[in-house]
Image 1 (cartoon, rainbow, N blue to C red):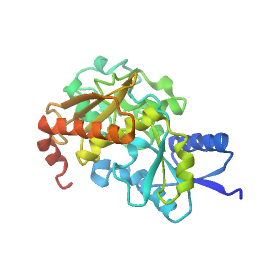
Image 2: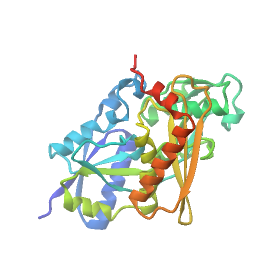
Image 3: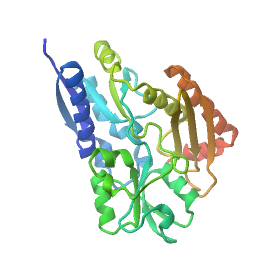
Image 4: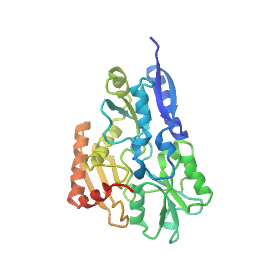
Length: 314
């Protein structure tokens, strides 16, 4: 039986690139017939408010999960950093593909780096994680909200609304826009989000045969990194209202896991930083490392920051 495999995807240019990338992998590796099911999510529709005020990154995946549940699609392709830390019952992350450059990119038409910006320069981002780390670097900058897909954000920069914007390097590279990157932030100075630069594939837990097939596409170092990073966020109750960064790097068979937590309201408060190393051989060991790093942040005083992030939104 030559059944067509259907991929649920958002319809932004970047999301479609990601889905096409997975389609090509499935066709090449397994000879599958694959089609895309393009969808518009709530996260794509609500552009006048920050994600932390309208329900978080889950807004980008809910409609895709409904398509899986209803049998209209077999798998969903996501930017892993947009996937909530706890999936709904009945859904699993079947695989994580090899990571693209996980760093944040400094994009500007006039300035070469964040250090070259003049006092009071306007920098666009709606990521609280980026806001608190930018404030730690340059407390004199004006950080203004920036929503929309990647092309929309670049257009707003080009129209003069901002002196610079901060975007994920991976998205720019995947769309052939690497020339827009003026500088890449050092991973210690601007720690990436959990899963940044990686693609995750979500399926129904009951899709056993498909899960086994997709598992063959896993990039093991990225798979383990994702488990460690996501465990930091999950342990702390991570959400879009929590300015949390978590990023794993490999040195041989040793993983170094860095995390930083900022205050969601008083964004000029000091960042809490944690770092641990381990040699995880499987997902459970990587997850355990993430839990320990989260506990280290708690020991540094994370409770007050987390309480502020958990306050009801206006």
